[in-house]
Structure formats: structure tokens, C-alpha cells
Image (cartoon, rainbow, N blue to C red; front, side, top):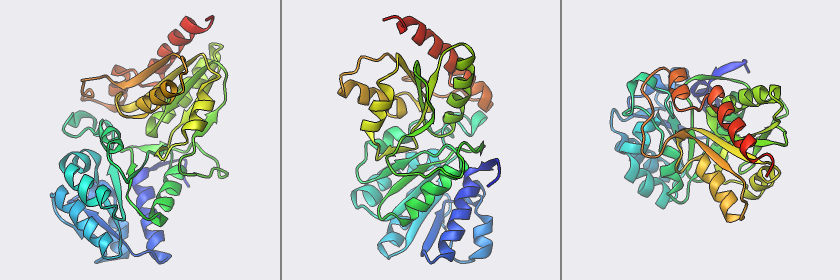
Length: 317
């Protein structure tokens, strides 16, 4: 696998391989063939893709019908439109009825940048965590993405996979093995725990390197598996630290920051936590990706700033 790859490309390659190994997979798109980068699949398997047009509710309903007919249905369109426009159909047709549909939320977070809040998806994890019967994943690298997709296509039941809209470098070596629920520890430290999901894992990896230069050793924790989640493992990783910083290109409510807060609170752990993301009651800044992350302090500089402040405040307590 190349050093940097678009996760939608990883998705399409996984679909092609799945059909070739005998999985009766049918992608469903909502006039989103370009977004899904699915042309190679269409060329290889003409007639296997269903395009419902710009009709997200129909997208989800059609996928549910295909699943009830014995197909492995996969929806491929932009996360903001999938989650917002087809909310009720996801809740009822997919989750409540426990149909075998895999929902791919493409260009999640603020991937669409300057297109602003209509195209940003900063609440998808929060929404889906409120639904039953659906597993939720947010891969941080091409290899992790491929392993999550391969697992999802073999799993019977609803799955949501949150995919970033930019090419991501590889974080894992060939020995990496994704397991549903398992926490991904990319660096071990003793002072501060940095926790993130999806593409912001790259930001905490970079922040940890900068913190080390300042004499602060950070543990870098990726949470690719939001549901199921091994909360006991997550708690054991957090407990030795003086402070915890969570980072996400998502509202601070309902995402990985909330997950961390819940784990700490329910265990009675009084470890200081700083949740970095899109602030409560706010929308993501419309702009270039780097500018947006800097504004919301979910880039490397912002993470370092908050981690240093939090650690120094509580290091001697």
C-alpha cells in the first residue's frame, strides 16, 4: 500500500476484492459516483451499482431492501447528506430493523472546507451513537481502513464507517491487526494521554513528538472502534496519566471526547480532561482544512498548547 492514500480509494478496492471472492455486494449511491471514486468498480462490474439520484432517503431505503433480499448493501455518499437527510431511514430501515447495510460516510468532518456547514459533518458520530443496532468505526489510516471494511463486509448487521475526505499517510506497519472494540496505542508515554479518532489521530501523533521535545511524554491513543469499544482497555490506558486531551474534527459533544469523559466519570477517575473539537453550540469554520483546524485548535499546535497547559497545571497535584 502506498504511503498516502485516499480512503475512498481503499473502500472501492475493498469492494472489488469482495465481489471477486464471492460476496454479493451492491453499492448504492445518490448521484455520488465521483465522491465515492467508484468508477473502477463500475468498469469492472457494470450493472452491479445502483444510483438512485439525489435522493438520500431513497438511497437508504433501497439499501435496506437489497439487504432484505440477501445482498450485502453498501451506501456510498457524503456523510453530511447521508446522516442529515436520511436520518429517519437510517434509524428505522437500517438500525431498528437490523438490516445488513454498511453505511459509508464520505468526506466527513470538515473535509469539504470552504463549502461550509451545509457540507460539514460534525455530528454524525453523536447522532449514530444515539441509535441502536449499529457498529461505528472511524479509521485513521489506509491499512486500518481496509481491515475495518473487510471486517464490516463479513459482519452481519448495520455498520457505519466514517471516512475522511483527504488522502492520509500510513500510520501502521504490516503487523497491525484491527479488532472490533480494540483501542489502538501508537505511542506509550507517562505524562499526558492524547486520544483521537479518524484523521485527527495524525495530529496527536505529531503533537506527541513535539511534546517529547519539551520533556512531556504522551501516550497516543487512537479509537477506530467507537461501538463496540473496549472501555476497560481505554480506562486502563488513561488512568496512569496526569491529564487527558481528546481531539476530533467533530463537535465535542457525542464523539470521542464524550466517550472518554463517560469512561472516566463512570469509573470515578478524577483525571483532568480537555476536549478539543468543534465547540458546544458552534459550527466548524468554513475555510481551508489547515485554517479550520488551527481555528478550532485541533491541529498540532493547538493540541500541544492545551496539553502543556493542562499537564503543567496538574503535574504536581
